[in-house]
Length: 264
Image 1: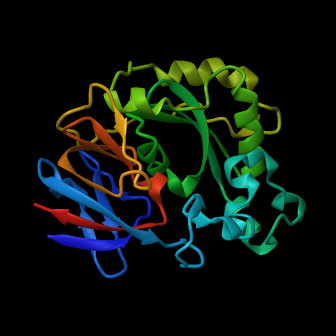
Image 2: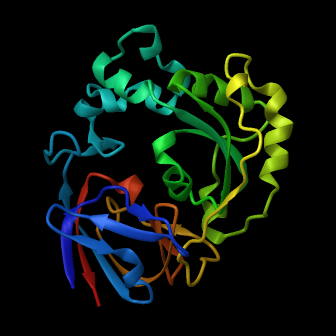
């Protein structure tokens, strides 16, 4: 079987285990069905997710020009505390920023390699946790805008991590944690503006990933350096494909790469 198209982050569907899909312009692939089969990946060209041109990808699937111009790549995306739509202040496009920022957001704890704090739109729960490779997660607060979520995350980062060790996550060298206890201990550090939105009694979400074999020591595949790769697919976790020879491929990190897939 052969597929061809520009890489975007894999879409997911809740299940035991999680179901993964690659969506192309006129086709889609249920990646779970490729497990224990040989997958060949061939880099063909770049295709910016915004302008569609064959230009080197700078960040987040965009060429350099688009990354510094389009509203969906503003600094507030990665740093939600910089959100200003609630003040009616524009960064790049106020209408877009109001649409995204002025909606319910969740501050959460997720355990993928360690317990970390993060922010996502309410509508992205539990997708965000799946994308990070978290096997367990819990909401802390649900606030009405992105700014409040951002300042809460900043306050909690002094007391809990905010980064995932992707190598630890992929080797599954993780320890289960009682996230309800973590949430309760962190309550005292929530800013007073967000404290009324504290979630008192919600339970952990458990996530099961489709992995037949975890790598013992990960080797990252970079299509710019290795434009053709072939290996047996043994698992999917977060946004990574895991191969039998310990190679891992970050699909989301390769957004904007136009590739060919051959399954045998």
